[in-house]
Length: 290
Image (cartoon, rainbow, N blue to C red; front, side):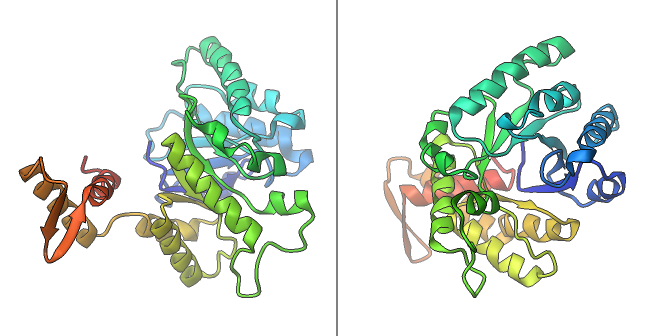
């Protein structure tokens, strides 16, 4: 499952869905949570269920962001959207692996009832939205078989701890949210699932988005959430290996293949070792070449 770019779409907007499906996003996240007013929840749920019934072939994966476990709305969400067209769920305000297990058990039952393959519905967890969640990030490893990725969020966490802001004057994250970002990245790496960076809120700032995506990829994130169709192309480009990176990765892999007993090699005047080989294999995998 390729999760380089995941674009949020309000679950109650047919117009925005029609535009979103043409963006080239790897996944669309039809949202039943924050972007839908309480009075519109039932209509949004019905609309998303109808979209899932469309069997037209698509090049993107279909995710739904459901409401949180403690909202009183999750059961209705699951009963409406767990059907053959669903690829995955985004779980907001999760507080650790027990939440994943609880939801997974319900998915087992619903998938069996609808004739789906057990385990078909994968989960991407927003893992940092409550203070308790921050202390439970290690619980995602070893991962549940349904867990496909971890991402993080700053707005709900800021509200939960009473912060007046989560940004410095230059737009960078304040220290508590740098911690949340880093810990989510480490947790995803430990669980060997996809690490997804959070949204870039200013969709009118493509240059800022590009710079932030490049920093995220540098640090180890392999994809990102998007809140506007115009962000998708930038995210896809920034999280895709360049031709030069692919060429270098191939060179490293081929050099070690030619000398399988070597731990260190000199390539183009640079010393490379096993960590470089691991990074090269990841680069080729990201490019779909392994």
